[in-house]
Length: 134
Image (cartoon, rainbow, N blue to C red; front, side):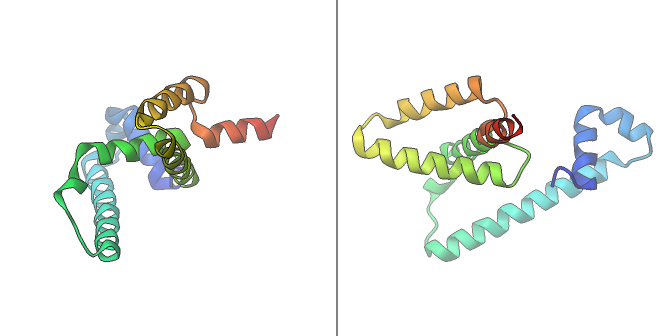
């Protein structure tokens, strides 16, 4: 998505919104289009999840759940489709493993997150790709 023309346009707007408007792009319309696209994807995921789960509770709207998704994206590697999926798989696996061993497993997950940010700022996928280039 980032390497698509729309993704490059969004990155350019993020870097210098004023320059993009001077170049003739309608920044407001592009931002609304990006918001609508992300909203559509979020709604679609919510509908599919509710249909699969056959139940929706207010606990699913807690801020920690959205924090988990950000955590998975950052850990796996933002900017790709495979990175957040990889990050989600790692977090779910490590979380299940640690929760069976100790009650304070979130402390270890937080420490793992901080170490990953320090030693792999591009995420796990960036680390894998960097090692492959060597």
